Length: 438
Ligand code: CA
Image (cartoon, rainbow, N blue to C red; front, side, top):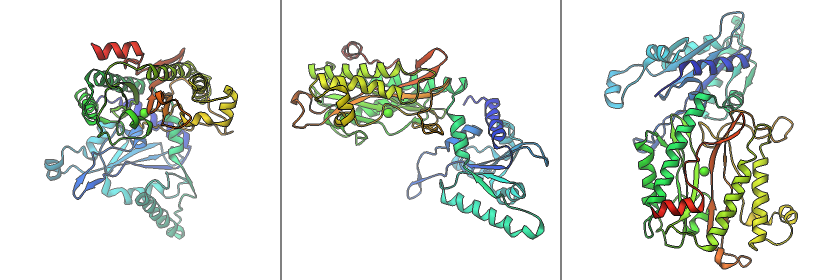
């Protein structure tokens, strides 16, 4: 992996500066058992990774802010070198090589955590830690604090304030650096190519999982380490189940296929949805709804600008969709009345996007401290994903039954507007039909 060590150092420095004083404890994720003695593929914790670039399990980052008693320090605790275990499970850095390679001020064996941490934490005013994420870690932290309290008569004090360190990191993670943007573009380009490949590959009577396999094949062969989330490969009526992921039904000529799939490249998620006809040609009704969702998406993307507030893309998409629902006789009344009454929710029941980054639903608040939608700023990254899902119902013309469409792209907020980093995945009716019939 191509890590910019200076950037990770800078992130730690930024956090330590924001802390002012005290000690932060940021553990990585635990390994998880899948069944009996088989593990799920390991995925590091995004907050820990954001500050370290270090991917091994059983690791903890401890940051000590500068104070009168010494300079700022970033300290890694990690697994020991262990030839026996490495023969079975693979390479481990060990503390010394990890310190060198990742630019920490110090590194220790994970087995020394209790001993070293009690020294670091004693007489510190604040502990920066995210309670409630892991019972194991909550208990360990409680143990350290109680240990220090018990030393009160020897003049050692425990921190009297615990600050949620994840909240501070959420704010930092919202703004993607050029280094992060480059990784997100790579992730986006791989996923976009996989969507195009799936369109070319799909034929009537295939199974949904055959198309899913094409995605996984393309992700891995291009160097993505994992899908970013469980792929949704939903033919026909299945597309009207928002989180459908059984992916085990036959694809019928005349139906649409909705695919929501993205990959993870060096930690960064892409998240794309495309919807296309199984037989390569949209029907009249399918095309009408598709063009509507596409227009809604274009209106939403146009609102991705510095200074727009978070909800503006959603409002723009909703405006277009509601007018379309009225035109298609899915909703009745004026646009304002449909918005007010919420009858549009029969066909569009989710929001138009989310932050994107190390997590597919990335860190960061959507509202500011006054509870207003926050403004979009340079370097933020989000998805734009309007949709329309029409289940059979008495108030719906039958031609539209079971049409489920979502179109989702990944967008960066740039100095002069926006950059759709997933633009390589084709999405106009003409481009999709041309690609599928080529
Ligand atoms: Ca998605």
